[in-house]
Length: 425
Image 1 (cartoon, rainbow, N blue to C red):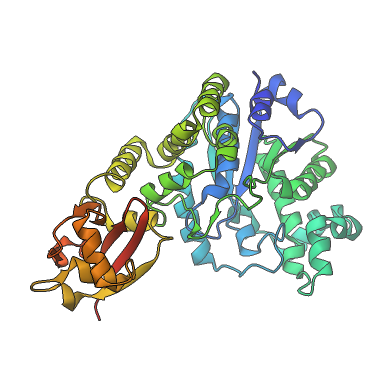
Image 2 (tube, rainbow, N blue to C red):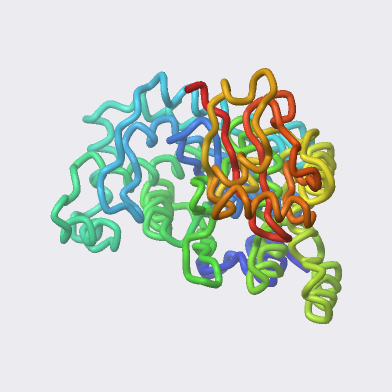
């Protein structure tokens, strides 16, 4: 299967220029994707385009990751209803440094046959004078065409409008394509489908200034089966940086994928081949309760981003977390799993010396209506503290029994959980 066919069966092709498939088979292609350095880490919403670059290299072509240190100072209006907050040079430089390491997990920058490159467009954009920009780039674009772009038109029709700063973004990105064409023979730009107008602008500039032929290929914008934007959760953004999103929480994000999305995401976000994914799909259809697709997805993506060791730790934590004892599970991982359950707090002073009775802790949390009900449930074996059944109605807990001295997980029956956080007051 050629590269275009590989991308197509995975559902990664939304649209492309005429002849782009033939270009992949005719010769080695150098192609690029831009990354917006608005944060020091990429997130799961960036994974689709990262995978596209990785597939490009695996097929023998040369990928370029362009970190927008220059355009990041401006902000892309595509898909935005209001202007982004402008970043300082120091902020952009810090963010670029963080992104570089994350891309290295997917791209081989040391390859001798199809080397990946990472470049920062601040290298040329910050040296470009306004006069040179207007004379060498601006004269090749008409206002009529630029105003016709959907992203620009939508902003012009809104109450906020669009600033000249953002209006110029498309031309800056077009200039990026020209610079990469000149320096590296880059003839392909890829991106999300919302980037189509910007990509076409770059192709037009190359044709007008150099008489060259360039191509564009855009990927779909992903939504979940319920219609929500992929990667957006109630708990916030799922980052690739383990300091911002723990590998355990990252693993759980993929494990919690809806059945209707799991096979599609295996095609998008893993390198499993068609036969392997078809086999998983068949198993999932026959025995959906096993959640085989979600397990494969969580393992594969977590391994790509954080490594095999992180997968093993996440799976061990899951076994312990939903098994016998929570004492060995980090408090942050416990909070990640139980972030949507009811919670209350208990002062640390109450847990010193002799501690507090489990029956009081349970009733005080609201998990039972009264202390008497808590006592009855404890006698009947229906109360758990940190996944350990409590059967002695006189049992007490102290600070030493808390997970990392920070919290308890109470459970009534099989499924009713409650978090008790330990406060200093």
